[in-house]
Length: 313
Image (cartoon, rainbow, N blue to C red; front, side, top):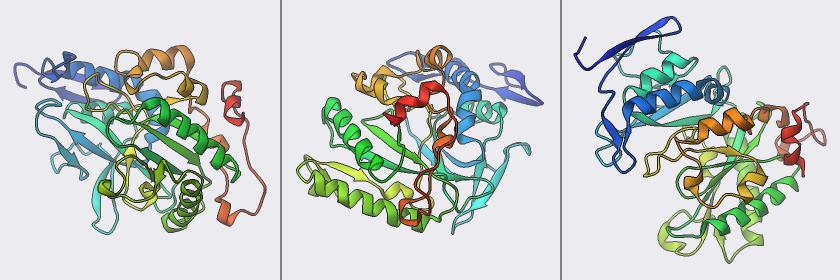
């Protein structure tokens, strides 16, 4: 074992942690030990959302100002207890997180960002939500993103959905709609295309479905394209590799209205927010509905805590 390493036991698994004092966020003086500690302590909450999903990671071995690489395949040298599944046309061997030890092991690789697929085992071909990513141009005022998200919420509710929201940790928000696991990626992509087109038709001056940035200098991309197979989004509670050590934070719609900037949610306060207020998405699955293009019943909801009643408002 290297001199600057430490052997820890997480559950039934022993993990050698290395370079714990390495600075990964230079401006914020956040070291690797803090990244590992964050993922260990947030594990019971984040696993509620990522457990059983195919995960990709963005690794920053020399910190967020150094080189980065996107890792989809489980390394050949990974311990046998790291679960994985070969998925997609290319049969990439994605890591499947099932416990705290997996998160500690990946954090030790300086895997700062966790990105998740829209489906989870055993139904890898049937997502349990769809997502709308509001993708603004650089410098777009966050207060305008908030209003657009609220408008999108109303738009989605008109289809009989109950949308949830989280910050991306970068520039904007993800609006997530829980679904019953009955539909293929293609069916969901077609349904979200319809939703996106009708929303852009309502707000043609400020929104677009065109991906090329040159065609939308002042408009927000209503990114419905994350709902295709093999696409991912930043996982709920994932750290982001930006100054401020921001977090992709699940919040209530009321909290969104009171958010002043993406940096409001970060490594310093995200865990404490969960401890004080709970997980804003704790019972997101209770609000799963049928896809509106395939709907056979008016609406389906399960019992949820009082804290989630505001999603119906």
